[in-house]
Image (tube, rainbow, N blue to C red; front, side):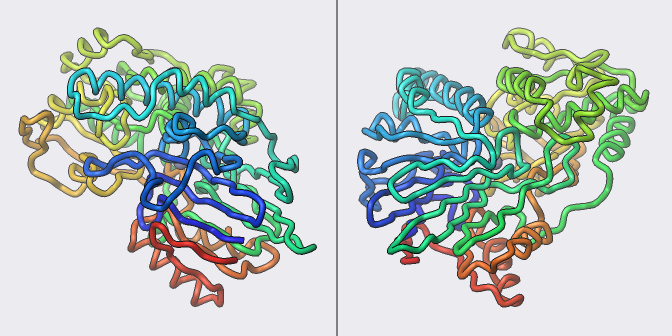
Amino acid sequence: MKLKFIGAVREVTGSCHILETGKNRVMLDCGGRQGSEKTPDPSLDKYNIVPSSIDCIVLSHGHYDHCGMIPYLVKLGFKGRIFGTPSTFDIAELIMKDSAHLMVEENKQDKSKKVYYDETDVENTIRLFHPVLYEEPKRIADGVTLVLHDAGHILGSSSVELRVEENGLVKTVIFSGDIGGGRSKIMNVPKQPNKADYLILESTYGNRLHHTTDPWEEIEKIAREVISRGGRLLIPAFAVGRCQDVLYALNSLYNMKRLPHTNVYVDSPMACDVTILYHHAALYLNPEFRSALSNDPRPFDFGRLEYVKKRIRSEKIAKNVEPSIIIAASGMCEGGRIMNYLPRILEEPRSCILFVGYQGDGTRGRAILEGAKEINISGRVYKVRCEVKKINSLSAHADKDGLKRYVEGIASKPKKVFVVHGEKEPAEMFANDLKEIGIDAVVPYEGDEVEI
Ligand SMILES: [Zn+2]
């Protein structure tokens, strides 16, 4: 059989790989690529991939960079089944509908912007969803059995195990998906697969160690400083996952009377919807989080918290310079409601932008974080006068030690590890780390085909 690497190789977005057995083709994720210079679609034409020739898709989780281009594939003729957990499908549906809506709206403003798919294509995609529960083996194609393991990254996230029968032998291919850091106060610790002949492994933080400081203490300290000097604390957060981490932190600080007395806003319609999904799935999450529900059955709702859905309300809050805490998407400052706040808050010396998640190469968030003095928004230049801070103890990805533990914890050592979903440097450094402990590891290039 063969592995083809189509996307999220030597970069972190656009996750897409294909496993070809003698009998069928299984696609692993079909995500959108992100970053201002990139087109979102996978390079299907470049690598002669005919969507109707794909037998099925396994979706690791609902983030856009893993599911965002599936409706495009459906539009181009994919008709097979799509496998994933029920929560992954709930999230993916929201993400795909939002993405379709955005593309249609952007095209109305600028006809050169391509509409890859619309709401009808998303509806056609949803009809192909086949939910699978964690740890329940499922035959998904002739000679291919799927098992999903809880990856502890976001709600519903999975590591994908494919058991492939070939010439009377069974080979196990593991696709890690995005692996959680294991210290989340909401998500479970990632489940370790027992066996992997071949491993496709993420490496977002393949060259870094996360701080082991308590994220709640860090958020409390920064919030107190900013609010007491009369500033606004703007937290760019991914609507799925990170936003709920921050909300749960603020909720817990509020319960412990450690949160400054101020208004808190969640300004992202998507984050509002996803938070409801997290609340409804609370009984499947981290045991400590579950047991805390008996004291506080509404872990994402407290005191002066307001969920902002209407644009007009968002614009009003953005103009109000009173001290407040604002959580807004997108997490990399590339679009969404955060664009209402950035032009103002960037130039407010008493305010602070607090980054709590990964900032991709070429994004506005990365530029702010790396100390840009000026930021361009819609053709206007804004001076960066506010404070800029980052905490990485909330990360939803394993750091290099976590990734190493994941590999070493697999009882039978993989014959080969393909290091993906990381920029060039972290991916290569992590592959070298694996080689030093005697594990064969490579960082594939986009379009590579490898016989396994
Ligand atoms: Zn993810």
